[in-house]
Length: 220
Image (cartoon, rainbow, N blue to C red):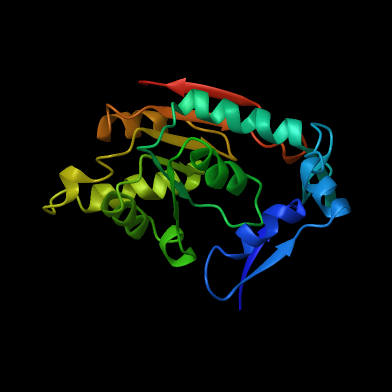
């Protein structure tokens, strides 16, 4: 049955509302519900908990880290500003949902109208496949750990004579590196292969809403 929902209209208007079309039934909103609609519940406050992640942190003992909305939003806005994210960006979600970095990878592009490219495990775990997938899907921002960056560069070096090698990661605007120390020689290798794509050396604990430091490298 088709139903027309309306506020509690005066009796003289009800015939007109009910006559909108054949088969329509007028369902008037009662007064208590109408008041609830007029004053919707307030959204979360900055200090409400946004999410919980379990991490070993610096203690080595697993513990739950509660992060507030203020911390999450601060991190998202920092990533948007630093990476100059916009509607034309496609950010790779290379981390699984069990890692805190997956939050910014998923949410930051969406709040500015961009896209998220969710990478399957079988793509993330194979450097050559990761490079090909990111290239084919025109990923503009990718995040990896330094050990994966090393394997990625090794895979590119091994395929240097193949026809597609020159176009590898052609749409990448930033490569974000996190989770481990970033050796200088690895930076030099990256810029020798991709001189126009900056590296972002990022680090931060789960307890502080992920990355708290960003350093952009344009050369080494």
